[in-house]
Length: 620
Image 1 (spheres, rainbow, N blue to C red):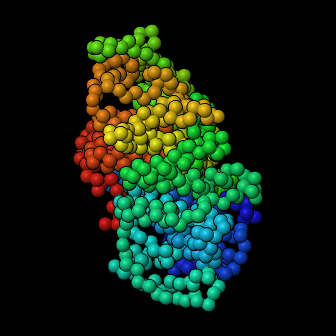
Image 2: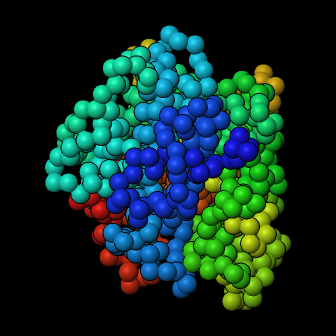
Image 3: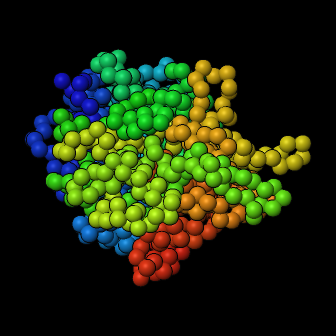
């Protein structure tokens, strides 16, 4: 039966319980008495597989925490009057140590279980450490566990600013708890050292060791764990679907593309564009499976919403699977839906809604080259407002009297604004509320099992666009940039080989923003538009100022990441990354503080000017 379970936590609970001290009972409380030894547990391949699935079960427990911390502290999500005390604390950057979303325990559980599994694989299958040995499924499990641990540390340090180093000999929550509560050193009395021949040789012995309590900051986490992933991983991702013919297995476990994505994300956060691009391009330019992960018709236009209704290797790189039938559910619908029995505690901000609603397609300008101040909107081609395929009904939705409003209703309101008929627009929006619906697409009221996407193609392409905005190189003694690549990735995918068998559309192109004015535009003269009428209201002259153009393009790409990836858990870290790159905390402070009421806005802006306040400082 175990070989058909997905993300089972049964065996991982067994594994972790073998080393548990009594104090761990507050962290994990297995529901059954266990009479099993470590020797008995790993007699069969499917037991290894089941323990691996347990790691994914522990990772599932982090899904809501990652979305809340990655989105509610950013500019596109806010609390409703129904929000509980924990969410209000997060929203106000005042998280207490008892806050369930601030609690690092689930990270420690995952790190502890990963440590235990990594040690077991080293002990019983020492060939995983031999680069010359043929690759086996045990190597792939080892690669998955290393990815899982690195991912846990990376996400934790982005949240807390620094994280305690959980030594590999610490393989239970009980040990971790004692270690964290120690003053400066901790004696690990059950540290077992194994000879190079593996678990069953005669050189196994118990040798207590002294562990110095230390913490890693973001730079240390990236340096330590990127080196591990680069140097120790031989292979990643067991091909489980050979056993059960379930193609989604490839994407719901750590795999080679996900390994590249994690490393690319780490290096981008660190500011190493060369290493980041090397890993991200391994995804974006793969020629396997008919150029998967390049943005084509697969999820174009109305099909874009299908990204969130299933698991598909053309877009999904690594996705945490949930399923109501297996009692593996999450709280996304409870948090976001304003329908019974849900609590509707979080909703989109006005800035989020405007990202989609003030984006225009199918318009043109009457340009005056010599006098740009005389450039006007073409009265015969004024354009159509709204990102129709990623916006209303997909990422957000209007609701009135418990009934979701249609896209045509939303467009009617926007066309009224377009005609400056604000009275009609205001009347249409009376008593209307807004909800996040990305985790409700295709879901019944009680499902609570939307998948959580960790990495997908749209996000990887936008990471590359961000890199190409700034990446520079020497050509014939002159500094050249890749900014054209950045624009092409977003607009139409023309940075790819035009002879490829699939026509690339780009991030904006696949949802209908095509033509001269449909894509991002960065030139010497950049026109400003009224967001609701699309009329030209001014311009910015960036002639001869490459740096200013790069800053402007970076802003446009961040806006595009908002439209493409809102509520998927990365928004706050996107803002952090850009603010740090610019050495300008006001970039983040301005965007985030804008969502607060007028009486609170200035105080939040000043609070967020201090980078220390971006983190939940529970380890100080």
